[in-house]
Length: 498
Image (cartoon, rainbow, N blue to C red; front, side):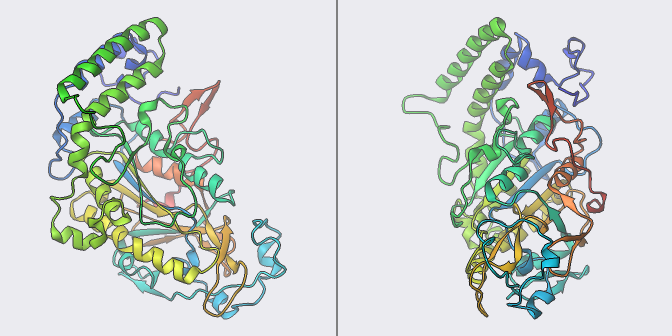
């Protein structure tokens, strides 16, 4: 593994660690490590946040853990993943020529022989579809946004809209996998797992990487746990899915007849067994399993407190919308994400499905925006009001865009769009990005990038840079090769950075 962190000079194990790894990695190899984990990990839990962030206890925990390569702009990330591929033509990238030529065939010179999906590749004609949505400039920056996003329009001066994203993947599974793991094939660690591995946790009582899935979204494209998996990284970096209800994490509660003291004794006994196993085999996975068991024990106290929104004010619920009172909705998950971020969770990823509008795009897109617009904007405003936006990176976007032409039948007021990987839009806010800014441009038809292209690997490299991490240095050796989130590509996009 390429050295990632500076080991604190006060660390008594530093001299024994020729690879310069952090204390956590040392505990994964040393026979005494499991005992140390058990002794420090089974005490009381203090998950309540101090004003302005994760609290003094969490800050002390950070100070003892891994270090970034350089001064970070952001300490934490919340990724609002809109699964299915939101259409940029109706949201962020207006194309008047499509409206003017509604129904006319897309010129062959624009497509340039690029591949199509099997869903529209057999169409004799590819009729251009003009957007039903109107755009207007907003904020002091004059950022043009769709009428479908009235709440997002209120935070226009906080947004960095990227119009020139592109990817190789043309179908959902490889495209979503690419965005979440940096590779189109499954088996690689998720970006949240890379962040947890590289930077550690900011609260020892909560996972570094949490996943939330909207219950009120259309179930068009499936989501798999491997999208927030740990791949070949140690298991403690796995994303933990929180579910709505009284028990947010599966199997976290004690069964009948088992109280907290008995569970504490069980975890301590497990540590002793793992210590013997570690002495015999020296397998780092043993330490990972013990770390997960101890975190689960601490989460029994910290998770219910973090997930309990009953203490939130009526003004906060009004900000996010009344649906925020219904656990598991996108609005409720945005509010929960804010609570997790302020308690020191490093990476929170929300998934909202239903953006795959091959038909009935006008109706479906209105519904999607009604579900997500207010809460997404509220999250940015809430973080800003609490002094957290400056060092929290907020990302909103899907896995690809939609075609300039209509898939299937086209009428004056109804149409659909196929998948389009060649150019699409997303937005970022906070965490050191340029505010009130549009980066990149597409051609007049919205079919190809015209200026400042941003590849998926470039986005990942930039996100890591904002976290203070060199994407070429954050690696893990697996099967004889050093792997990283950006594979063998990617560059930091300086135009996105303030």
